[in-house]
Length: 138
Image 1 (cartoon, rainbow, N blue to C red):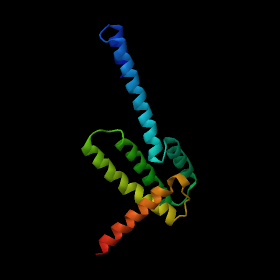
Image 2 (image 1 turned 60 degrees about the horizontal axis):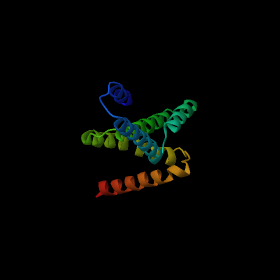
Image 3 (image 1 turned 30 degrees about the horizontal axis):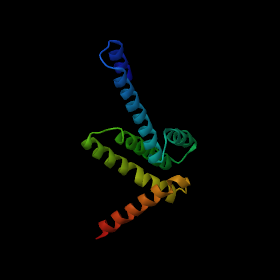
Image 4 (image 1 turned 45 degrees about the horizontal axis):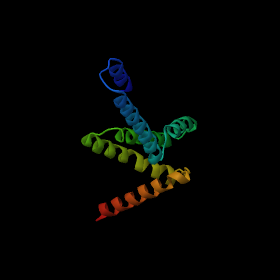
């Protein structure tokens, strides 16, 4: 993106001010992407750590649950990169179907410890699952 603006500048198709505007826009996009990653509660480094640690697990069910959770988080990351509303809805549904039951199972069934920073996600997922189960019973 910036390279295109730089080429236009070199060809005198845009002004210094327009190049600076492009730099500011890029800086804001980078800042927003980093803020999003922090808001998400699970960074790329943590995904890599989960993938690495899962290699030592022998329980195939737990490996499947961890894979589902990681896949759900990756979909959530993609969701926040798009501006397409239909795609956002699709990604949100796919991510929720994978992440929520996986996190609940990891904690409740396998005793996986959740970092303090992620406790609220777990509590929210658990509460939503309780509401859904109660509505299904009616």
